Length: 511
Image (cartoon, rainbow, N blue to C red; front, side):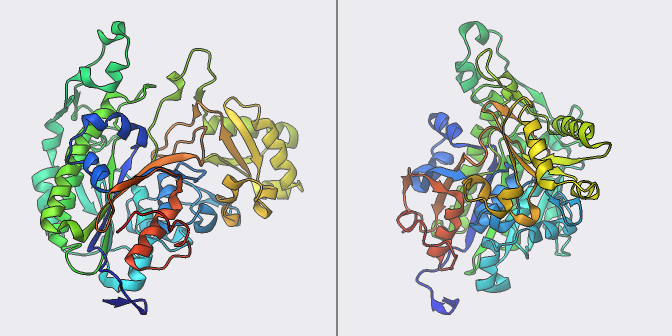
């Protein structure tokens, strides 16, 4: 096979399968290693190449921003997806949130100013190289699709069925058949209880003997009101969501023949370990542990299917994560510690009142998103005020707000940010805010509907990452690796060129 003007050294995998697990982290995998089966997550670690310290340097915790950095191999300062939302200062409007409709899918893809893995595949292998994604409750998966996606299927939480987000006009008879068999009201009749003896769960074992006597043995009905008006909302945030995803993925592969020819196809699946109930400050809440234990079984059966139907040497599986695990910091830590919840809207209101007291009536603060404060530039300029001085004044005020560690004015950073590596990697000048806020350790913001949750460690998060299957070596790498280095490493092995491909040549991830 020849592509890109050179002779390929090795046939590429027929299927590249990204398993993107919401709220999965390395600590959970380490704690639960002895409780997992040998055929799921442990098999991926044992027979694949596992990176033990992959660091995401994204200032925002928005899963879509992290996914864009991973897939493109560059930082937000280059690709431009700086958070869940940002303000375009030229027109004074915030960017639109990703949503499950074809217009927003393409718009979300166009927000990325850099090519990503799907685009590299299509540019070399042509339109025969297909790209798709499957999601239950994660519209941010649109960031995994590149500029010209072929498939995007999502779960309708109101009706309990999968649908074609792209509205592509393809024959979806198989989708209708799947919905009739798997996704209808049968799941509403199910209850979610522990898959193992509750006394074996981490949360129980960390309790004092006195607390253990009152420990819950949870048992949740899927049919008692739903979530946010969605009848199937609890199904979508329970272990049953991962079962549906596994079954739908198999049906998708078989019916579309995705990954069955010699041209590589790319499929991303958004699994979840985020339960619908509010978790507490323990290291691993029982409900979250139960979701991981059950996900382990779903992945084991998916691997078995791929081994039989495609063949182990014909697919490459990539396991990674989206948002970090949510720990309710308001109940976490020793008594007297400075921990709590930082409310963006409350902070914005307080800052606006402060600026009004000095400069008069008006909406001086446009909003706070992903740790970034956006001031009303039009109002500032109409009053003949200095943007730089307003940023500095607002920063001094924010430093007095509980939970704030730093409030960094952005005026000079846009022009020269080399003195702050974190900021320099996350400022896209046309989408830059006015003040960048970092929180004290132990503080966090509430989690948004799209999975964004800022905490005291922006740009310093480790994420799980494993290559498994096609040409992947057996082993582990313990040195720190930037998340943006991994796709260039994969592309180099496949025979594609990325500007950053030479950064980690010494990592023996592939044969």
